[in-house]
Length: 219
Image 1 (cartoon, rainbow, N blue to C red):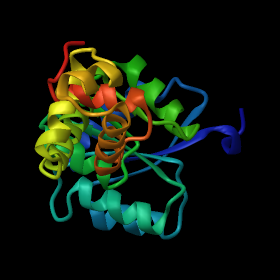
Image 2: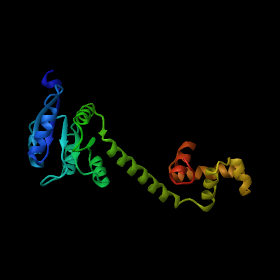
Image 3: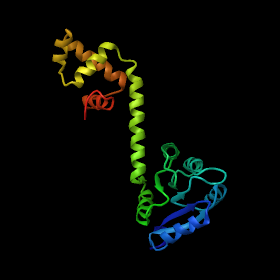
Image 4: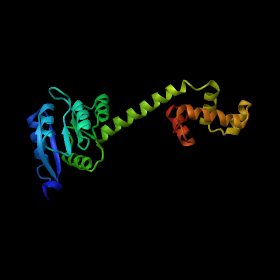
């Protein structure tokens, strides 16, 4: 396999022993070429000004600019380069900031050789790669943020509309709701349409997913 066919990776970590450990893990992979290394942001940007890389293995905590700050800078200056975060930080806030700043992958530093190689290959193909635990953290954050945003939307819903939502959650049809509330089926449908518009929902499936997330019904 020629150099042009290999995945060019750059290792960025302020600890030499960590960089050496990663290099030893990857040295037998014929499709991966370690093209360089850097111990801080200045060294990283100096390298990229004259060299290329496909994937950067990025530490978060380093002297000067953090890995998260550098990731945002790389996304702006070198959009074709993919960043894989390697960190001991498993805090939700840190992970979400890294992803928002452009990280396409996130692994714990104690990850296995197999998973590290899989992540590098995935990013080289333009795919994202997150460890199982990181994926769970991202999903929990996304669901909680969705619920919070939707809860704010509920503030714009009238008492009558909320009443109809609760009856829909109980499984009543539009006709049954109309009979229970002494209003026409058309009025029920109108209220339901207004609710969906206020919440930015498109289909009945979206509506019932919303009801489930907000605790109106069991799933």
